[in-house]
Length: 534
Ligand code: XMP
Image (cartoon, rainbow, N blue to C red; front, side, top):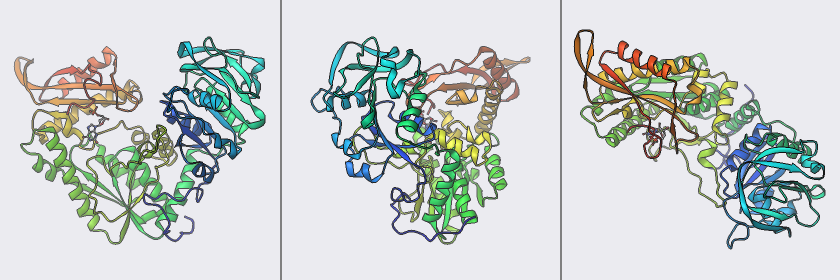
């Protein structure tokens, strides 16, 4: 461990250091005009080894200048550039004298702002589109195949590039599908290099970042760890820190980072409310003890079940679990002396400012069970605040977190309680549901489908129906299998699991678990259904 640094008083609330203070890497800023792929652009740039962040397209020029970016990327957006009120190309950006790359709307706005011609096309281009290079493709596209496919999503087109620019490519509806003015380091492309359906997208981004902007690749999971550890040491100094673990990847990775920075001055608290999946609590305890991280694991199952007795209304269940969680956490935290800091697994997607307007940053509650009371007098430590979920996973792998925890599917804070529907949560039902869920997970992992699914789980509706097992009739619960694909849980589709897998799962659940005589498959998408049942 390196030398400790004294705690800082000028750290912003939320543990964010003033820009450029500890940051070791170069950065590129993505000015967000509200496009659906803006975050993806930042992620792809980071995958090219260069740190990228989003700022609203109307961000103050001095704010941008202060960040000393190596280059700017202007994102796509939903507006039409020539409509009244549409966000215009901020011409002051030219004063920064750094490379600019406009993508889709960003390209059109730049073209219009610099004297080019943008118009609505007869036919828009949505999806895979053929791109033809002109004049060899210039600095940005030169050497790539003359004919290639790319992904487009636009109705307006650049009819004429501004004076001094060279057109580099065209597509059936776009006379100027790419342009450049290398002397001023200004570039524009109509298509989306950030989506996987643009085969040369990464190559084009890399050329811009490396050859045009002169970025040297240095952003990686390993560099994040070095940088964050340093940052945490600066923030926390000699202070003591606590972290609430949920068993999920975010809080685990956050805890590992903080532990790397401050060692035993971090204490983790894990509240086992009795509604976790099979062996999950044991895994948390085992993993953290392997890392030598001080952990208080509280077996609070009895307390939670006593509070949940007789409650069948879903929101009441959630509320009871949330409140009880806070109570247990407070009791345990209260036993520790001199704690000044609380670790939160806030991610970049929770704090991002986007859509071309200055949205206030939102802060994720400490634990998705229900958050902590406002009178908690801790300063937050948020080492994942700059990271996308896939980067958190990469950092987790780099830190040696077991794959099982790194790739865990999302799991609701109130756990299995919200999957026992239409009746109270009690130990018998929890045991049945936990056993069914374990079988489903085991088979899904064996079929190598676990990572392809957003979530897969079982639901226990509190109804009994008749069945026949052996020579006798049974009167038992059904188990519903729910497996969905999704990108962000806002929408979801039911997963087309193979029939033989479903057959195995159903047979095993009914044969191995007493109290279940039927298996059903939920084939509803979200909307109109939700992912969870309650
Ligand atoms: P729904 O069911 O609304 O779920 O489609 C969207 C995502 O949120 C998770 N979820 C919860 N997470 N506490 C949580 O921490 C809850 O009460 C809760 N309800 C739903 C759900 O698992 C899915 O990923």
